[in-house]
Image (tube, rainbow, N blue to C red):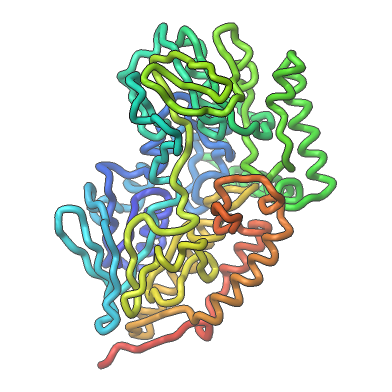
Length: 482
């Protein structure tokens, strides 16, 4: 078996395989160390917006989290702990960037083509490169023309000295609101360019006292109980952010009170108040973003950006903002359509072309015409309210069942039936039509024409129930010839 990516998903798959007694697998990692998005995102203030005791694997608890919401460096330490604890290093090939994946139907084998000309062949393959792996610069005219320093949040330059500089941050999403408070006290002038305001709620973040860590180490059941409490608290949030309900108004009221409590100026509050339903875009958590915007050297700019010039940013009102550095907190190329590299299945079909109008899969993990291939964080597996790792664990268990079917039943092909996939997606999109994500705002959850290929329209418990059964009748099964 081959696994593409050594982030949470790829390492989690490897752990599941080893626990099942399967050792014949390799992890192809394009970088020189593990970690995926947590290796790449080292910008100031980078942290998770899910509590640490929930943003970790249930089968590998960490009793030593330093705080409620851990920063990226501590999460990366946890990922590296997984490699050591489960003996994964021997399976990882670093600096192996996959440039294509192709299925040989006659032999029932996947071939991964690598940069530099090498190949790896395997009976089954797992796409575990993650949805937040390719940094994306915005489609703004003149990006190449700017002569100052350009930094993307996922490619941070730690050698650049911000002291006394005129700096712009483009983007006010999850990374932007973490970067702004970290930069504002280091620069001479900080201009924050906002396209759309977001709903922001408080972050209940606290340092973990020593006695608490000792309790978790001595009585693991206590940490498990906390994890369960956090899980069910977040499950309740689904009623606020996934569907329009009385809890939606309650959540919006909480966010408005947070804004009114932290922002004194009426005009700034208006600029920071969304005009869409909470949950339609990603809900953000921060205690220090609003205060940072009100520092004497900070300025919130809501005029649209017309272009980047040689000396800075020109906005639609005709003003040119002279800058030394532009920080792009503009996110990632999330594969709502297409694939990160060409994937060819049965009969030479190409997955990127089939997904051009929006990605579709069966239970987010298998695609008809691409046998023995499993997607982690595949189409419509995104949570809007709970930990992504809860969803991931359900995917890992399902993929393991598929791999075991291939091995135990001596199969050449295990391919979900097209009619089964179509029926599943028809029901899925019908449910999505009633969610807040599809209520009219523009977000990275949707394709340009409004197709939602990203989110799962339900509770985490519903997703786990979906993934709990592996129905052999849903798949075409072709045995290897003796």
